[in-house]
Amino acid sequence: MPIVILNTGCANLASITIAIKKLGYTTIVTCDPAVVHNAKKIVIPGVGSAVTAMRELSRNMIVNVICNVKTPVLGICLGMQLLCNFSEEGGGIKTLGILKTPVYRLRNKNITLPHIGWNKIIFNRGSILFNNIKTGSRFYFVHSYFVPINKYTLACSDYGISFSSVIQKNNFFGVQFHPEKSGDIGAQLLKNFLEI
Image (cartoon, rainbow, N blue to C red; front, side):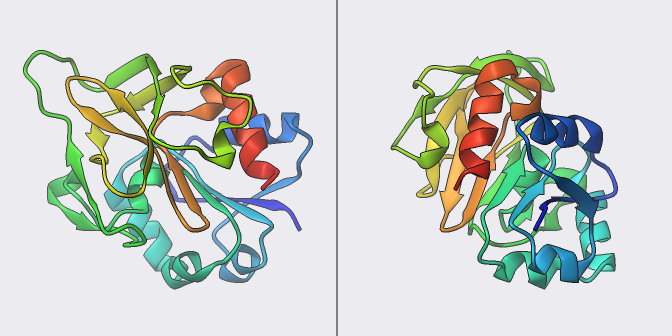
């Protein structure tokens, strides 16, 4: 079974596809419910808007499939935010609801948006995602919205406010940064996820 990269209709799919293939895995980009249901792993990619992504997932009748899969799922950036139950983006939209926590816009007059660049992640607790990765490691971020620190937070970062940079609930994992753009350390995190 391949690694499924969800086609959310708005993401930069090439970079995550290439990053996973470099690790020796076969990928398929799809929104076909049957393929997603039988996937070995599922990646919800970053980049784009919550409104567009949720519209595409709903149009393909795949929301319930995603919410009920037992295979490991990794949400990247926007993909992590979609795991939550509500986003302020686009005037406010209901998202997948796997994590009962909202997504807010970064608001601080002393920072520029979006948050672009390398930033540290600080572990709150251990995770298989962190194998061979040290707390304080730097990953590449591009985002204007954030998931507040909550009971599912595995690691946090700071950009005018402390926010969740890694989350997990059962088989659902999320990272606010882009591991596919984070060099060797990002490749290690992807490898850890793919080896679950």
